[in-house]
Image (cartoon, rainbow, N blue to C red):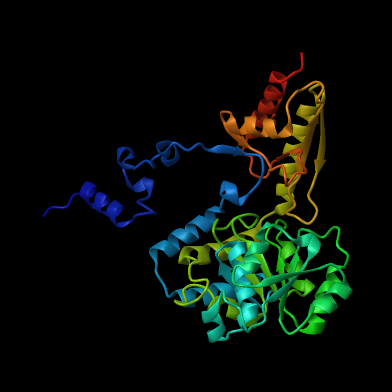
Length: 404
């Protein structure tokens, strides 16, 4: 059968899903256009004036991460071998003893807790989440109780609230399996973190740190590792700009090994459902590499310029005041807080937030429980020209609700 150039190129396209034929090799009318899937499904994109939150799909991945994931999709390999190699590479990059790629920070908490309760005992692993007969109490600071401490309880652990050194000493017993610390809640503690870690070391109890949202800067990871925590978790799809559904577990080699025993692809593991795809393993490694090379100072300056521009523009509107700030203990992402005279504008923050969401284009801003009930606008995820759209929409909504 005679093969011409057109049929040959068509065959190449069929044989190379995902990566496709380079456009330079094909005629313009032969390049396949990507369907507008979201429009076809009837779901709307949005302007992100919050940041890389899970509910909004996380951060935009580095292009290099996408390339690495595409490579892993097209080249299969033994999962254990890949995880071993990727874990070693990430640990070396971040100065940790050991590392594992997990199904997000929440998955890391579940597997890390399971590791501390079972410590490689296969009989105990088979029992989870039934933890009778094994150490299953986790000490947590009372002021650090939060939504995601359910992840600690998921494999069968019981939480014991403590506040002071004397509370901790009184609570430690043969059932104590782990101590827990939330890195982005340093305020209002009745015990210093150094003392908290020191008590864990004194009693020989593994201490787990949730540092999921403390990047950027990526240097925070090395600093947290150096604090002496035995296990630390991070989100992969936020500040590190890796795969949305991936995360990192760093720490002691024996604990990371036990955590992996409780996860996929081990067939009978409690965390079997918390699968990590090969492309996510590779994608997380490249995300760490790229993040360490990125000029975070320049990006912070970019964000500050945008936030300052939004603040200056909004301050020109009568009855509006703004304040620029950067979160403490969280990722270094500046924001502008917007307040208005409610005698002049008859709309609540919650209703303005909803109006932004209901508009066209859709604009998403920080959840009120995270912003102390105020309107916060960030520049982290804003694309060129979107800051002006956000400013105009806020002003338009307020003017439509002017008290007459």
